[in-house]
Image 1 (cartoon, rainbow, N blue to C red):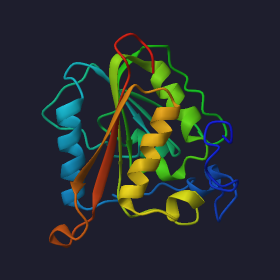
Image 2: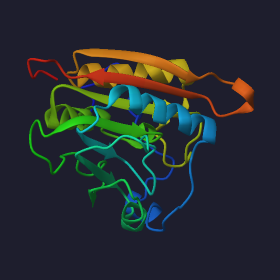
Image 3: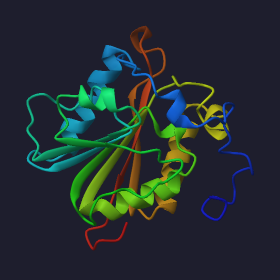
Image 4: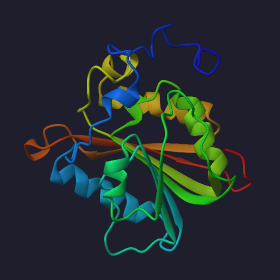
Length: 215
């Protein structure tokens, strides 16, 4: 990690609770982590970016994926930390449980998915560049990854650098992750501004893999 992000402090990816993540996520949480307005914004983002009939990878997922109900995909592959949550998600064609902080290598073939999503979870990754390099590997040329986040988190499990930043700064951090992972184009979007109708704020950073197959 230090080689990928040398400008960050040595303990940028430390957590207040260093115990294994598997124990923290052992019990299912059948709740949503952002409000209805923010969920609608995520769904709108996916509707705009993810191709109908394509293969979607929903990383760090749970019992809901926030994909647009009216859009059909060839396959939705789910990943998460709790089997019961993933099994309850009706949008998933198949799924797998894996601690990406211990092993960032995805069990998927090169250039096998069209789009990837990470919703309100990027703040928990301790090897974000390694994980996003894997996302770039499994995306087809021209494929897209949408990383969305709010101001909510499990504070004992979010990495230190994330908690030291605000929304726009977090956008710049995620864009840095994507750049170091080799994505050729990134852009940040404010989907729900802070204080908007009293609801949850929401930002997204979108990365695209080059048409020539480069990250």
